[in-house]
Structures are given as structure tokens and as C-alpha cells.
Picture 1 (cartoon, helix red, strand yellow):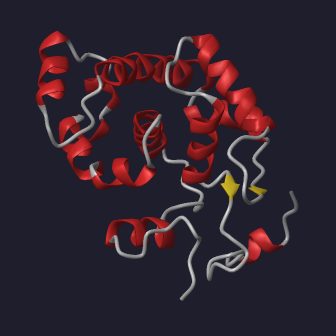
Picture 2 (cartoon, helix red, strand yellow):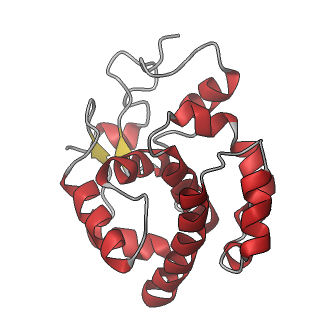
Length: 188
């Protein structure tokens, strides 16, 4: 079975992520929050590095319970910084708490984070390969930064949109390329 060229087939976690999660539309608010936090930790690193630590991130971040994360204090920050099982970058940890608060504010303003995203996506799925940014990721990134989020540059947001299924980017020779009949009818 041929997969996308980026998928390390020696890593079972990566294979499962590629085959069952990546580019699959999932607009559950908890998932949208988890992926935004994880993607922000990817900045300067590989997704595989983050994915390999995902289970420990879930445990350390109270299963990405946003109401808990927005209340993390210095004691919790120090606990996270001491946790060798996650990415221990102080700026990213502080940004994750800050971003959680802004995520929550966006939910209040729009009714959900997904509703906020649809003001940019117009409920459309984009099919494209071999890109790391586009006009959509540029616009969302710019707005999130304007709202005060950190580690949400256009490349990170592009990866996020792929992760949650807004951008469908399986390689043309991947066994999942346009596997979903609905996607076959959509255009770039």
C-alpha cells in the first residue's frame, strides 16, 4: 500500500495518523483545540516528533480540557517544563495557555471555533498537494495573531487545516488520494 511520501512507515503511530486521521474532516471542538495546541508545538520541529509525544501531551494537558488549560498557573507551567515526556519549550507552553484563552474567547464570540473557521473556509474542503501555505492559512494566521495567539504562523495553520480535514493533501499516488467520493466531486 503506497502512502504519502512524508509518512514514516516504520512508525506505527505515523501510519495510523496518516491512514485514519490526517485530512479527515473532524470539527469537534475538543479535537480542534487539541490539534491547534499540538500544531503550535510543532513550530521548528517535525510533526512526527509531536505525534510521538501526543499521548503524554494529552495526559500532561488534562486531556486538552480547555477550561483547565486556561487556568494553568506558574506551578503547572513549572510542572510542564519538568516533564521530559513532552516538548519543554517555555515560550510554547506559555503560548499554549494564552492560545487556549483566545480559543475560548473565539468560541464565545462565534458560538464555536468551527463557526469561526467557516467565516474563512465557507464550509469548503480544499484539495491541493505540495504546499505549505495558501491564502486561507495566511488569512486565518493573520487574524489569530491579531487576536494575540502565538506560534500560529501560516505554515502551522496550513498543517492544522490539513490535520482537521479542511485541506485534503494526500499525494496522488497515495492509496487514500481522493478516497472519499464526496471529495472527488470538489474542486480546488
